[in-house]
Amino acid sequence: MFDGFRLAHVDVGDVRLRVRYGGDGPAVLLVHGHPRTHATWYAVAPALVEAGYSVVCPDLRGYGESTVPPDRPDHSQASKRAMARDLLALMEALGHHRFHAVGHDRGGYVVQRLALDHPDNVDRVVILGDVPIGEALARCDARFATAWWHWFFMGQPAPLAERLIATDVDAWYRLDRGAMGEENYADVQRVVASPSVQHAMCEDYRAGLGVDRAADDADRVAGRQIIGPVLVLWGSEDDLADLYDHDVLTVWRSWAPGVIGRSVNAGHHLAEDAPQELAHALIDFFTDPTTRSLRERVSTRPEQT
Image 1: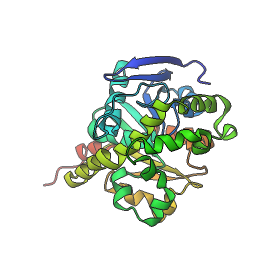
Image 2: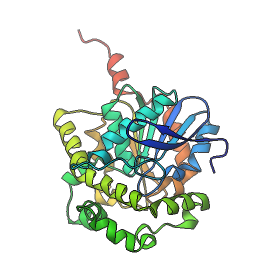
Image 3: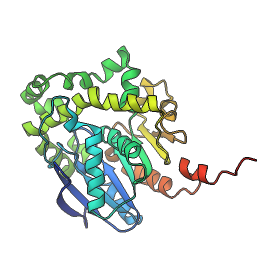
């Protein structure tokens, strides 16, 4: 797994991130979701390196072997803004001032925040299986609450969720050895057994219902958008399209006017279910000369007379 990649632990401020990185060329940041680690990219990352990219795969703060920050009353230590700052510091430490960013699940929220807060550092953005947290909660109905009930369970005050999860960790996470790949499965199974990681992951969801939603709501009011090219992909066997009436891209257009996207023949975990299709989709998007940023389109628009 990750043959030829380096493994390191990098201090980025108040946390230390475990990261694998390798390759040469334009930089690509791959950000995992819950409850995964960077190992979820084990088949995608080497394909990107082979295609000529420098690839960086970190564990988010509180996940995997990255350290867990001290709790704050508002759970902001687990905010997507804090996670985005971590990743920006990590990329700078590895010599990448500007890069493409790909995020799955909770990692998609981090990449969204990275693109909104640090547009000069993020080139092309790929979101896998998400709409913005603020949009999801603003549109929440009984169908969403029933399907994604874990948001509200894990968002309850500590330690309710942690205690119930700890009673049967295997039943809660339902990790599939066959679907995940042996080494990826072993990495995730080992770290999710840690009480500190279980707590940090719950804190991620508590932040999502509070400070992360507030950040999205403030951006919506201010009209902030992602100015770079954005690709949104989701699994055809996942429930995202059903929840948004098979019009996921409409949800995204107020956040990224030039967004493009489609479904992939996969479940929720695209990197594990369809790694080759995903890698090809990423490479096509990164190299497509017809997809330009909003900034580029504006700067090349003829002057009105």
